[in-house]
Length: 156
Image 1 (cartoon, rainbow, N blue to C red):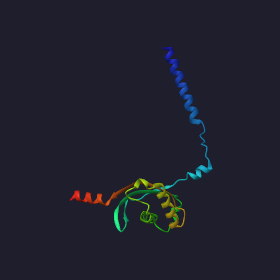
Image 2 (image 1 turned 45 degrees about the horizontal axis):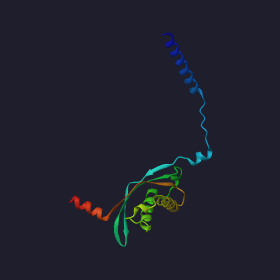
Image 3 (image 1 turned 180 degrees about the vertical axis):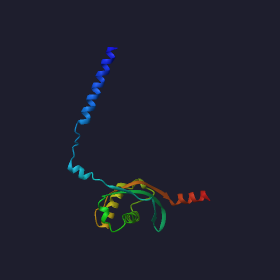
Image 4 (image 1 turned 45 degrees about the vertical axis):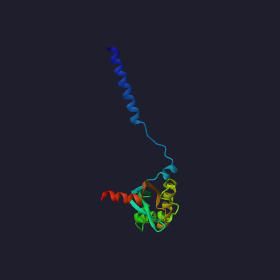
């Protein structure tokens, strides 16, 4: 019985001492100024899913379905003269139509990272300032013209 009381008192003292120590100990995280500037807060804005028709040799070959988000500096959005979402939609459609290297039947060769970087540079060039920090591709799918026709035939 005495042993149990002594162990209980020892545990309560240990617990009280550690609680006191950790509640009064100063917490000063080491802040690196360069890392803090690099890790500044960004605004993340999601676009509505969009479908872009891929036209090659004067015929529709299929459709690319995209879901994108973009990260931008929150201070830069205050003095924009053009709506950023419209410019981004324009650049997405233009880049998919201009890039003849996109072979819709060989999408495994499509470089998503380079596509996102091209979008950032072209949108920033069109806006005249460095607004976008990165484009995040949430989903990209391809639906061929034949698949759309088959789906429509099944519904009717």
